[in-house]
Length: 484
Ligand code: HEC
Ligand code: HEC
Ligand code: HEC
Ligand code: HEC
Ligand code: HEC
Image 1 (cartoon, rainbow, N blue to C red):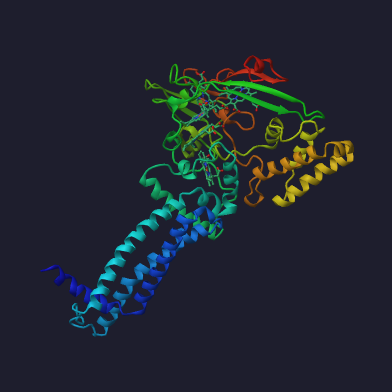
Image 2 (image 1 turned 90 degrees about the vertical axis):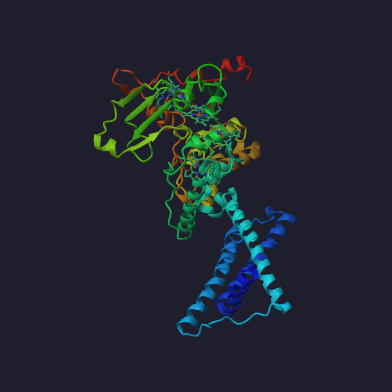
């Protein structure tokens, strides 16, 4: 059978069956959406996609238009099948489809046109699906589209060291199966937002988060850590002078020189080391049992003598392999507590330390429960202005601009950390890196986790850091190190 004798009957039946309004509608939808998409791609090349700031533009251009395109494509055969079925049911299906005269140049051109259009449609479909996938992976889509829902995480992200890392690099990571999983759960989330069916605040820890070894370790890997960084922390007291004090720690993170299993990273995440634990609460804060396997394969089980967990509670708890996220659970959505935020603003000179009692007054203004952000910003300003007008009128007259800048920064601190719409307030999200504001390291390193042979998970102050200075005024060690 020659090619044309196989193709011709097919073209004949297609030409006959496609004469119905469903197929016609399909053709119209496909063509118009295809033209709009091509027009947008040309616009993007000439003007640049960044010109589109309207948050729903992406949903329309990358998701809705391709959906219309695909629906149109599907309607074309559906209409033909429907006509076939109707004629068949009525016994009106022709034995032989009407002849097409391929000597007629009009028919020949029409057939060629359909062929070309099909090829073009395949190309459009491929480009559109690629663009759609790319768009739903973008920071703009994840952080901005469902504005209220992601506002806390997005705002914190923008001010973090990872603000140039895309959301999907930590939340999804490489590989086809996680890509598919994320798209499936993404569709569910879009519906959750449409129907306002989501928890406020979004719960943490994220149970389905991909293990950190497959995401964080795309960029940071344990054999390549920097060593023992010096951490300088400044605090300001809530007194008249906002008196400053400084703590200097040398964190024993561990590094590429020396033994790989030493230091903070070495003991938990170096190759061959495995720590698993059981947490009996949803936030992973209560940890009655920890097991560590060292590179030689030796296993030690530590049981807390403080937490009394029944075998049933232990069995029902979460069993987890420790990874980066068990310490660095807020590497990018780092919300601050009010005192810490004010300390940092004072240290960086954004808030003047010459304003009497500023730390104390600002703390009080920040810790009030406000109904919404706008009211909060207004009342924070009023509270501070009223205090200085009543108690320090000379400050208002002589340090006006310092006071205004400081008040602006306190308002900004509130906006970065508290989101009444999502019920996110001070301390909603726990930070596990440390032990001052939350249990953090001390969930295990509290001195109560003991093994059968009497070994304790260490908690002496020098095991994680050398304390080079603690709450000192201008510590000498900073000038010795050439830092100050
Ligand atoms: C550097 C890695 C990283 C990047 C980049 C990142 N996240 Fe996260 N995200 C995390 C971690 C880690 C958690 C907390 C996981 C846990 O505790 O289980 C988290 C938690 C969340 C949560 C749950 C609520 C919470 O605060 O714990 C949301 C929502 C979220 N991220 C959204 C985003 C969005 C939107 C972006 C991009 C604008 C983004 N993330 C970028 C690492 C990241
Ligand atoms: C796409 C690459 C990339 C991924 C993925 C990534 N990071 Fe980072 N991370 C960086 C870069 C780059 C920096 C340095 C930023 C800077 O110094 O401004 C950084 C900095 C850090 C820091 C130091 C922060 C500080 O305050 O200086 C920590 C801790 C960290 N990352 C942890 C994580 C964790 C945990 C994950 C996984 C949830 C992760 N990172 C995923 C690229 C990445
Ligand atoms: C047992 C807790 C813990 C675990 C697990 C952990 N870290 Fe850390 N990490 C720390 C501490 C503590 C610091 C020092 C923090 C500081 O400087 O204040 C640190 C520092 C860092 C830094 C800063 C750069 C450096 O080398 O000094 C990066 C990046 C980092 N960690 C990434 C990771 C990644 C990626 C993982 C997972 C492979 C991981 N960490 C696992 C506790 C941990
Ligand atoms: C889930 C439990 C758990 C958490 C949380 C945890 N650790 Fe550990 N850590 C262990 C275990 C288990 C060991 C090993 C003890 C042993 O067998 O020597 C260990 C050992 C260490 C060591 C080696 C101590 C030494 O002198 O031998 C350091 C340093 C350390 N951890 C730092 C940290 C820091 C810093 C944090 C918080 C950021 C932290 N750990 C959080 C379980 C934990
Ligand atoms: C298991 C590890 C570990 C142990 C044990 C430990 N620390 Fe820490 N400590 C940390 C980490 C991690 C941080 C956070 C460093 C940072 O903020 O970058 C920290 C922070 C601190 C800070 C600074 C807090 C601030 O905000 O000013 C002080 C002070 C401190 N530790 C004192 C101590 C003292 C005192 C002990 C002994 C009772 C102790 N630590 C035991 C891990 C540990």
